[in-house]
Image 1 (tube, rainbow, N blue to C red):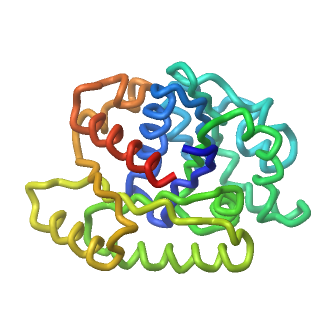
Image 2: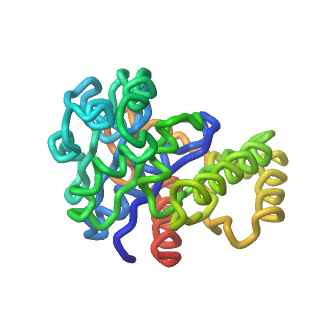
Length: 253
């Protein structure tokens, strides 16, 4: 697996972006890869899920605003080889700050450039919106992982996001690639989840990862302990799913 920066993104909230970013990062780190999670969501869920105190300064807000370097903002994560660039609630106003810098869509890329060479993998947890912060993440990334919840309207939201991805590739980041789509929060007991998974695979075929992330109690509990599920419940179905997904991501490069 070559050095890569991945945006974990979807304009819909509650689809498993943070869960995917955090748990993939933990698996990569456990495999000996130096890994960084960049939290760009004002809710700071990835920050908290990795055991970092909410409200730490500097944060990704200060990095986007040009008030701190990314290197100054990075803190250790809960496992070896894993570090975190934490978020803060101030990100709610980051669009205003970004509007005042030169070439706003490229600010995160500029700020991360001196730092990313230290890592084998960088995972950017994006906010649930297609605003300027998410555009910054897509411009700064090599590839995009798109979590899709196994729920009604998932397909419609995915199509809209992939249209945006095409626009960003055409206008701002020609080298941006789709790493793949991952079906999350899948309850195999329901007909709806099975139908959604089938529809996503029918429409997007080889871009969809074979791994399906189940809806489990252990995945839901792990963030409250500040741990990835591979540490909190290593034998759980959720931990197994993210190990399998990490292997697929690695295989795709």
